[in-house]
Amino acid sequence: MLPVNQVFRMGELRKRLLWSGTEQAVWIDIDSDTALPEPISIAELERLLMERELESIADPFEEMVLRVVEEGSLDQLKRDEAWAMLADFVHDPQLFVRRPRGLIVRGIMERHGVTNQTVYRLLRRYWQRGMCRNALLPDYVNSGARGKRRKPNQAKLGRPRVVMEGKGSNVTPDIERIFRRVIEERLLKEKHPSIPDAYASGLNLLRAVLPELPISELPTLGQFRYFYGREYHFTDTLPYRVSAVDFAKDFRPLSSTSTTEALGPGYRYQIDATIADIYLISEYDRSLIVGRPVVYMVIDVFSRMVVGMYVGFEGPSWVSAMVALANTVADKVEYCRQYGVEIDASDWPVKGLPDVVLADKGELNGTKVEAFSQAFGVRIENAPARRGDAKGIVERYFRTVQERFKPYACWR
Image (cartoon, rainbow, N blue to C red; front, side, top):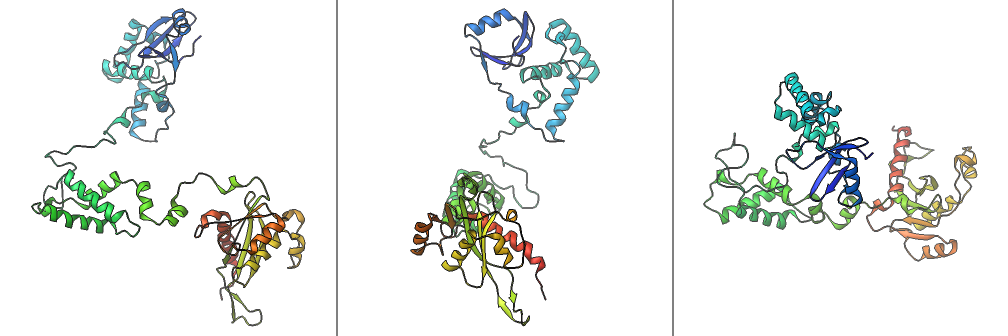
């Protein structure tokens, strides 16, 4: 037996198989507005397939069948209303036969108070679009001529004015040219004014070009905003409105993640330093502020585990970074014991240098790092300037750590 609901192409016709038996099948033309189920023998179908006159194609209504309909939407209400009308009859093979189908249609008309045309339109839609509940969805998605430009004539487009005087005016090609000039000369700049300021510049230019235009007929700020949003997409204008560094850091499309650069645990580390958001005081005189500590963290990219750290009062430097990297090869049990903390080796199971260390363009950028790299076989990579996103894992961990220890800080 041939698969029911399969769509076939025969020349310029596209047909859907509605029912298949041992000797007979039923199909329907899915493109005709007046189509009804037609019988065809299985032998004829097999012959057409064998002679390549008939070929199986993808279902053109697959997107509709799989669409998730918003709860409570008009689409859902119309679909469910149509389904309630047909649900008791759509699985009856008698619908494929002309005379019994007429009796069934008449019963639906009497029960639901609808016309003959309505029932046949819904049945045809059900058969042609996949024989499921979503096949009865209305075609509201095609309404409104989305994406097509309206050509203004003498009549004003849009709703009538309620507060402002006059009827307003359509945005003509002359006005569009002025809008484009203002947008490209003022808004598409790194140091750009606000949209209302750019609009005011456009009005000044418009009054100079078209002095006879009444004030009440000048284009509104809403029309300017609409034109800007329609003609200049956010993703296209953004590179002109921010610096190259900010665009690369905050807005560029992402093609991968940091984890994809790590082959496994211990392969790639990220290192960075920050000044903690806390002030330390003297243990001998609590009224004396010692300063804010500098915290170094070394994070394994693959596992997100802290593999080394250093806290001191020295600013970010080569020496401080080396102390943090030295901590990555230290025995963590002994390290914690120095501070009166007893742990098991399985609590912090990290010890060793990686293949790659990613730092910012600071303490690990210079001639000294070359000796370290050659001696230990570690490749040092430096992120571009002002590109904290390049090592976002360790950057985010600083925030996590500070959020955790701040509640335990003494505020008085």
